[in-house]
Image (cartoon, rainbow, N blue to C red):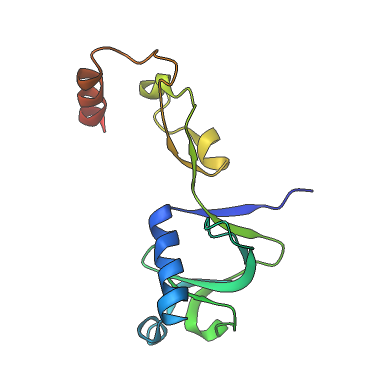
Length: 141
């Protein structure tokens, strides 16, 4: 059985890596309750290093602390048991076919696979002129 995976954006991953490397865990973040704490989760940080088990705390949508030593449950509003789960940054799909983005603006199938960035039109099938197409997508939101 494959592990369920929690995905976070690369920006959040960078915050976590910096917190681990520079601070261990942030004393500032501990002075207020985190929004949620993921306990005992397998962290796959995208660096190519060996995955490790840690507690990960999130406040206002950003990772605030990553601790191999553990964080206290009372430091968070919500606690998620991460045992058997893996935490990883979002994945990049460099050869996707998301061309019908106007018809399917929220591609759940990609998000459920952990893909947070996709390169559309890798085979040269993008609408032309591309600038006009991108402006139209931006206008539609």
